[in-house]
Amino acid sequence: MSEQLAPLDMALSEDPDAVEARANSGDGQAQLAMSIVSMYGLHGRTPDIVAAGRWRDQALANRRVMPITQYTAAFNGSPSRVSIINVPVQTISPVQWQAVDQCLTLLSHGLAMNTIVCGSADESRMRATHWARVVRK
Image (tube, rainbow, N blue to C red):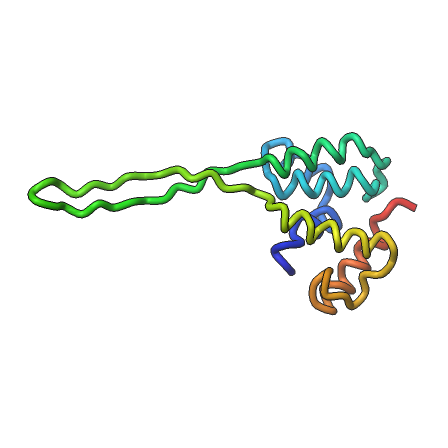
């Protein structure tokens, strides 16, 4: 499965209560998945545009810290040093959100079969099948 579309796959295939628990604990991928569940009313839930927007905003604002180790070698008799630099990293990039949004648009209109936007042919069929199963009728 495509890493870009992981939040979509999570929204389509995982229990929404478990995803919501992860989203509430700060998982950006789960927050984006909950945005999808809320927006489209997946898994029998009532669509809630306000909640969907709130989850999406949290996902796009979510940052984590990636530690980078910097080693400074000994020079002119001074000891060597190791420093840890914490670099903020965005959990969900705008590019990932755009990829998810494009695939969702195709899924919601029944056009996702065999499109490169939703992954390989097999992935597209799998996502379309999951979509048909979980979308609120």
